[in-house]
Amino acid sequence: MKKELIITKDGSHTFLLPHLNVTYHSNNGAIQESNHVYIQAGLDFVAEIKQTPIRIFEMGFGTGLNALLTCLWAEEHSIPVQYTAIELNPLTTEEGLALNYPSLLDDIHQYSHKIQAAEWEVEHSISSYFQLTKQQISLLDYEPSTKFNLIYFDAFDPTTQPALWTTDVFIKLFNMLGDNGVLVTYSSKSDVRRSMVAAGFTVEKLQGPPGKREMVRAVKTQ
Image (cartoon, rainbow, N blue to C red; front, side):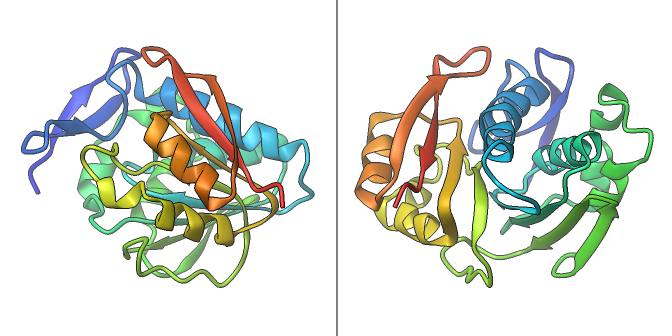
């Protein structure tokens, strides 16, 4: 699958898939989008209500940016995180290592390199507080062995991957969460919110990252 490395407006890299005309992150800033949607609206929120360790599931490992930001957060806060990410079509290690996130995030401990080079299907201790498992599998085939506290839902948009934004998918994600579990995503389309509500979530629209008016945080309240 051909990919084009591009610079977003905050100076951070993402990949463009020319044949789909879709990018892995917002053109308005990859790092600032991931920080806003997944760290600030998701991880910071869950950390206030959940005892450690925090178990996170990421749908769409992509460039590994969300995992890196989470690893840096875990080290900064000295809070253990167990992180599972799935990706059906992963980047090559060389593509992952070409990204400029380490220099922009002062990744002096080379966590990004460890995350990118980590073997798939194996649990790794990336840092003192961050455990990572990457699995090459589709969400529809994935069967979790534990309940999660937080889901980063970072699939391509509903127009590009409509099969991943259905009520049935959100029912599966709802069942993957423990009590008071949280799902965050960048999309706030009305069809997406209706599917989440139909799956049982309590859905809250939040201010979106730069360039996007809204995002969604969904909570399993039952």
